[in-house]
Image 1 (cartoon, one colour):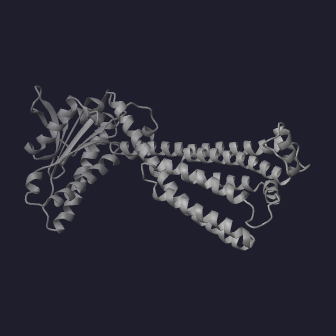
Image 2 (cartoon, rainbow, N blue to C red):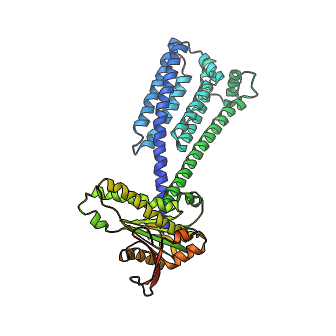
Length: 458
């Protein structure tokens, strides 16, 4: 159930992002179309005859206005219907603007004969179809291609009727419609082409293939964006917990982090001793700033030693070493992380003293043992975390630091495992002194512990 909800949330976020990209695409297409149509209008002023300028510039202005309508209503609930209507309008304007003869000129069929021979309408429609890719919408590309095909077929019919009328042929009333139309097209095409059927079908097939290729290209671009967003979402989510050197490996793994998995891990707890008293009388923003600096310093230590940031708990931090995969030196890295935290706070305190601020004291507890890793919480708010007796003991050891005037309290099992791994030598061990077996609150059997004093020494 929770997995389905999580997946639904990811799909919803992806859908919203794709809609955002479509809106951005419409804005980009609007600006591009204004520039392109402006260039065409200027070109027509110089290249077209005076009688033809009115039609060409009028078509450009109409399409500029239609582009603005799509852009202005891109966030409307009726945006798709507007897009459909405007696409049909644009294709109609292109068709009429291309096929209509010059006003006032003798209507002897020469204009359509020239337009048909140069394939002018076909080329304009292909350009318009290509520009639809800027919308970043497969639906818009297919719609534009379909409208262009209809316009192309309509232009064939328009041309055949116009040429038949120019030569006094009643094309609509003849019984042999296609043979008569075929003869008209054969004369327009000339002897340089095989058959009229091949000439006409070639344009239709070419338009269909262009639509398909452009639609596939847009679909692949959207799919790539989806994969990129999903991967970045996974990486960002993993970066909340794992050290940077593990994020890339975990992002590509097919692990189900919601399923519980038992493993051996070293658990570390650290918090600020006397935090309530330290923040007494401070404004809320000052408290938040303090916690941000503290959390950042602790997280840097955890990640620097290859640990996993489990969670922030108010003025405390929980980390694990050996998750998601156990390593031979987990205990060593955890203890060195604890020592690194002490040094980091000492450096922080040197700066605080110069500003007249009170020093900060921390308490760290470290214990090793079996834990259960998995996603816990409600279906709407999951958290990847470690649970079990090992976690409870580590938390209790951190609280015992106050009673023993220590900054670090580590279980004997943790120190022994670190020494046995060969990575925690005498120079590291000398910081710890044995205390013996201590009673851990809420636990029946005592735990043998080693501590690091307030001065960072045994």
